[in-house]
Image 1 (tube, rainbow, N blue to C red):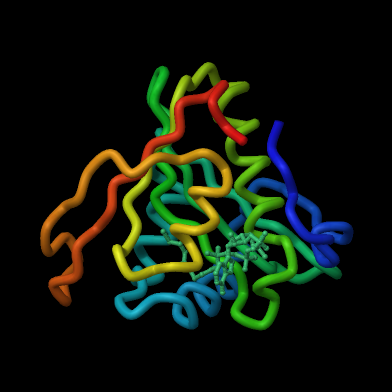
Image 2: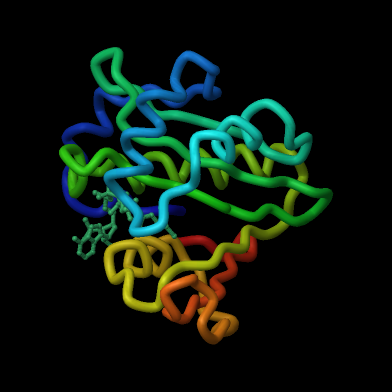
Length: 161
Ligand SMILES: CC(C)(COP(=O)(O)OP(=O)(O)OC[C@H]1O[C@@H](n2cnc3c(N)ncnc32)[C@H](O)[C@@H]1OP(=O)(O)O)[C@@H](O)C(=O)NCCC(=O)NCCS
């Protein structure tokens, strides 16, 4: 059973759906506001339209894109390759709402686990993943272009909190 933690005010208004091409400008803006080395727009479009293994989702609040994620699913493995919540809407339960649905989706696809890489210094995200039962299974030295290490984290389905 996954616990939601404190009262998730925005999660009550959140709507989880597949990403569409019309969402890309909003996704692009959140990506640019969230990461030091954001993916180029073409990379977002590639994942949405051309990567057959990629499942692309958004969370809408009040008709606007509040968060997005790209999730690869290959047989029993799923890989969360990108997730971000609009900087103006963080700490209101959306990240937890979204991750819970992504785990449910991957499980419905017959995946048995979810893997991800996260900057070692990204305390918000690491805390979110630990809360859901992800474990740190490795460390990739200088994984990011600025030299920061990545933590490799894994959730085995059935063990989530
Ligand atoms: C990580 C991120 C998705 C969390 O989204 P969010 O909507 O703020 O998360 P929630 O409000 O649902 O919080 C869920 C949990 O995340 C963790 N968390 C979120 N923000 C945090 C913060 N500022 N400090 C510490 N923990 C935090 C906590 O464990 C929190 O649980 P709690 O409320 O019981 O303490 C968001 O901070 C984000 O988009 N960051 C930029 C992009 C990014 O780093 N993506 C991850 C790439 S691997």
